[in-house]
Amino acid sequence: MAVATQTQSGSEPARAVRELTGWRLLSVRALALIARVWSASLRIQPDDEARRLLADPRPTVFVIWHNRLFGVAEIHRRFRRPYVNRPIYGLISASRDGAWLAGFFQLIGIRAVRGSSSWRGTQAVRESLKILEYGDLGITPDGPRGPCYDFKSGAALVARKADCPVVMISLNFSRAKQLGSWDGFYLPYPFSRVELIGRSATLKTSGPLEPLAEALKEQLTAITRDCSKK
Image 1: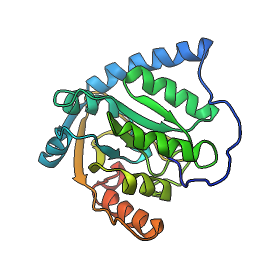
Image 2: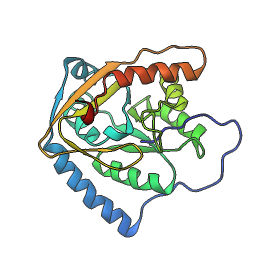
Image 3: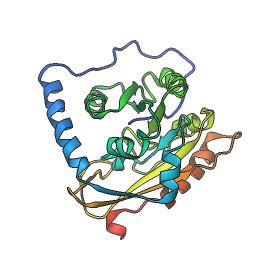
Image 4: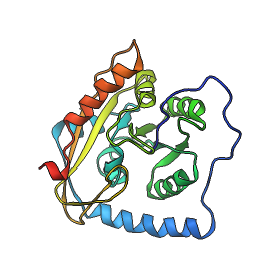
């Protein structure tokens, strides 16, 4: 889930949002089926605070680092949907790469808002805030291309403007394969234990975005544990 890093005052490039078709769509469908079965095998263990926040009936912004996206749809299915019959959306790049992620998420139950800092950024922020009238929103503050664990100002902007709870989520994996991608993406081993931590974000409602982004980064980092740091 990519997030816009800033709003733009001028007009944005007139380009079409990329979508998957043909064999690419079929490939993503196969991967989505595997991911559903794989995620269902995980022993996800939420702490008390995460359970309480996920059961809150209000529309909510969920914030999670990009390398912990695997299993997000399963969390929504197990711990959110029993209490709240509301769709969840992810803010995903409008680029060709984003089309793969958007297609994959759609098939595992996460809808997409398309945009990034250089393309549809302003529109994506507006659409995201509109979604919170009837749905939940998930953002990865270091997406779509990093650096890893860098909380961008666009994510802070969405969090500040959202008139609803903002919840920091971390998935800490007991056993996982870490890929060589820019974010060191985690693939937890099937049937492994996953610690789910949730905390309400503390937000400053005024002032520059950069200090707010840094404060939110500290809050999310505080509940994050990499496998290599256990």
